[in-house]
Length: 243
Image (cartoon, rainbow, N blue to C red; front, side):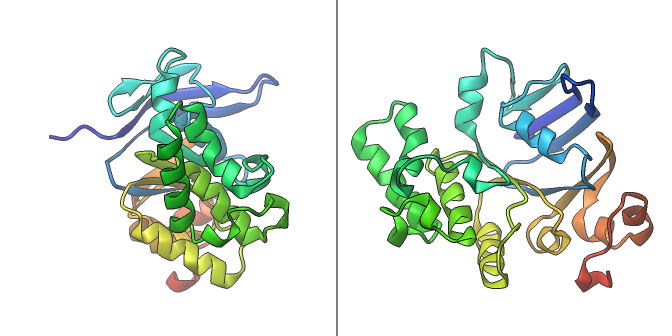
């Protein structure tokens, strides 16, 4: 039996100001799966993604990536396995050009110049942004910035892609392109989103968070069709399911 690629066991985290963000979160994610993290504001979705990417470490419990427990000592290995796309692309794009942003991760991983070039070209091509390679990020549209942020994660060739609200601020055409790309992507995807129609289109499994706890988890269509469950957690059914 194959071990899950991502494992969380009784994960707790309290912010320095005393705000509890995660209260005993446990789940598994299989290799190649697409999982949506849903819940209202303050449910703990972004905090959980930051744990999966190694930006935060559990204060109690543990997270395993490919069988390795996340600790300060194992963070370099884990961060090579996980690529994160932040909610605001401006938090991720800080170099003079798109090309330099995408190259930043591979460069800091110590890869040779020819491999960095190969990865930058492949990531921009996959994100549909080869034409914007020499542009400064501030000259990009919201959709292009989102694509550039995705390319910075893809350049690290991660086994796991974690994304925080990837469809926010996208126009309908850019949102549809994103959904089609995510459906075609064949690696593990963990997506925090308020866009439940995107979750329905892309993800086979749902983890529903409420106040730092898992309120429900299971197949996407079953959970998103449960109007009472969603209402209890401050959500509404997707439009296609009669929301």
